[in-house]
Image 1 (cartoon, rainbow, N blue to C red):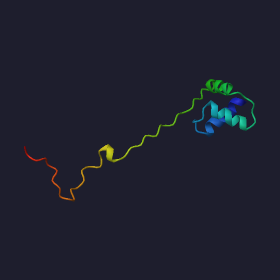
Image 2: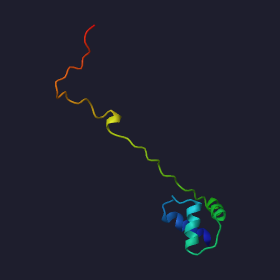
Image 3: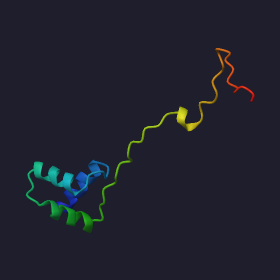
Image 4: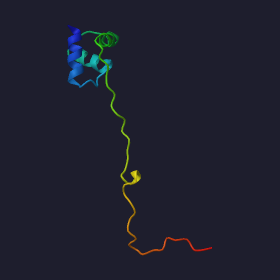
Length: 82
């Protein structure tokens, strides 16, 4: 009944929606149900929302794959002898 609609919303959003968002979707579609009831029904149906991986910026230069750049200016990078 209502559990099948919760499963339908859950699967429609590939398992990323938790009880607050599913509750919001059900309210928009005209169902009168509480958020904690939705959470309870989700637990009984063993539906647990997946979390998205956090964005972590990275660059190729920091990974060490860039290598050494050619010395185009022919500068001497050796320290003077003591």
